Every structure is written in C-alpha cells, then in structure tokens.
Image (cartoon, rainbow, N blue to C red; front, side, top):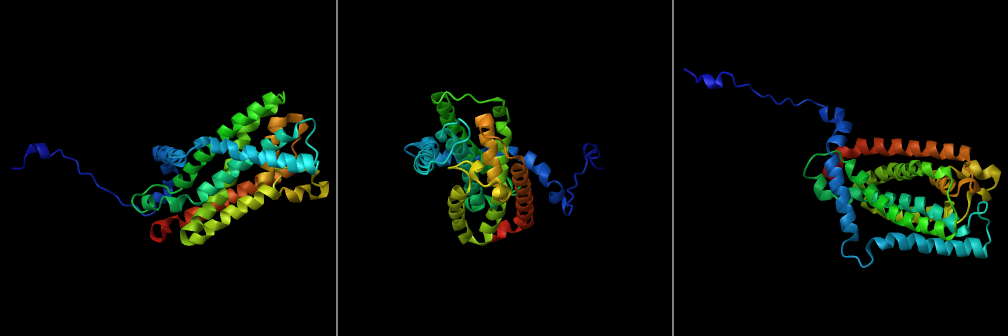
Length: 283
C-alpha cells in the first residue's frame, strides 16, 4: 500500500508556451534591474581602472574644447553670444549635452560587441546592455556639471527658474542617443566594421551642431531646417535652462527635434527587438 505521505504531494508542471518571452519582455526589463545596475557599475569601474587621471578626463576634455571654441568663435570670428551671457558660458552650456549625447552614443553602439561572452551564455533582455552604458555617460556629465557651477560663480551669472527643467533635457539627451545607439549596435553585431563610422559621426556632428556658436545666428528661413538635427533642440534647451532669458527657446525647432528624437527612438527599439533573437548566433 503506498505511503500516505505521498498521497498529498502536488505535481508541478512546467508549461512551455510559445511567444511567452515576447509578452513578458518589458516586464523582464524590470525583473532584471539588478543586472542593469551590475553592468552599469562594471562599466564605470572598468572605464576608470588603471588610469592616471581617471574621471578628471571627463572634465578636461569638454573644458579644453570650450576654450578652443571660445577663442575661435568668440575672439577670432567674433560671433555674438546670447544676450549678456559670457561666451565661454554659452559654449560650455552646449558642451554638456553634446558630451552626454556623444559619449552615450559611442558607448551604446559598441555595447553588444563588448559583452559577446555574456550574450551567448544566459537569457536576459539584451536591451539592458546598451541602456546600462548610459549610466557611465551620465556620471561623466555630472563631473562636467561641477565645472559649469564653478564658471557661473566666477562670472557671477545666476540661473533663473528654467534651471528646474534641466533634468527633462538631460533625459532628452539620453533618449536622443539611445535610439540611434540601439540601431547601430544591432548593425554592429552583423557588420563589425560599422563601428568605425561612429567616431566620424560624432566628430562631424560636433561642428554642425550649435556647440561653438549660438543657434540664433542661423538665418530665420533656415532655422527650422537646421532643427532637423535632433541635438539642436537639446542644446537650445540646455542653454535656455542655464542662461534663462538670454537664450530664448526656439519652440518650432524644439518641437521638430523632439519629433525626430521620438522617431529614432522608435526605430532603434523596433530594429533592436527585430534582430535580438539572432545576436547569440551572429556574435
């Protein structure tokens, strides 16, 4: 006679349901949040490990670029600043979002290749990998922001109420880089030489974006067309938050930039999700 202790044992059945991972993908992003934090911390520690100046490089690079642009555009070309704002402050207020955008784009574009071993071993939403690289770019941004505070104290330039909206434009700068970053990193898995295009894009974008000069010098009839560059709206938003009324926000151009950022974010996520299943085989 069977033991009575086994009569009440409940059987556990594992159900394999097709498409279940697809339905739970976005919920899995939250479930794997600890992995996101681990990858972000690893990227930060690896980046500054065994370096001489460490995180100071995130401060020196935009600071030197600001000095060069101030001399070339402000002193030699004698381009006007926005209102009464010092030209150096005008440039550095634009260097912050540009550095945040370019660093996040560069890091996210190569993220899957850099984590090839992890991708081939376990399941997790691959979107976590490029998203985690945004944290490193944000840490660099915070380091440079300290220099901005020091410059505002030096020039005795007090911000107005718009500074409270700066976090919104920080998020917007990260989203502007995340969309193209997701698309490019998915392409990099199949075509490894595509990663060499990124340094050219960021270098070219630095000069066609209003970093060393104000967007107000663009003729009015070309202003909306110029805003097709999505980072233009982000830079103008940063200057509006930091410089206040000295640098008014061009609303039509900002709305156009916002629409383009949204489109590229949708394109990046959709292309990434479409090719995500093939990453383990191709990488």
